[in-house]
Image (cartoon, rainbow, N blue to C red):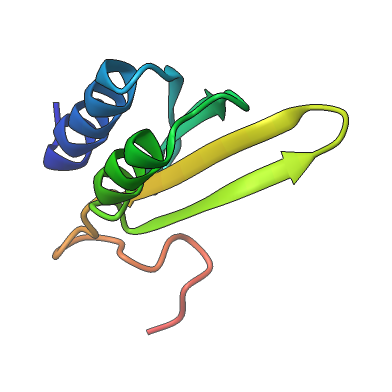
Length: 92
């Protein structure tokens, strides 16, 4: 598993330990972690959760009246140092 996957799995495990139900999803350039945040989450648990997601490259909270609150975090995968870095449409 690439380092980004290990990091994302560690973040998900720590969020689970804090009582959140997590989902991991692999993408081409990053791994995403999502967790549903219950209304009853204590202030102490919020601090712990924020410390955990601060280890990700990006994170945020999506809150809606229909779906509740979803915490998300993204861990970027390493950019290749050789080969076709820019992809097929990249001009050198």
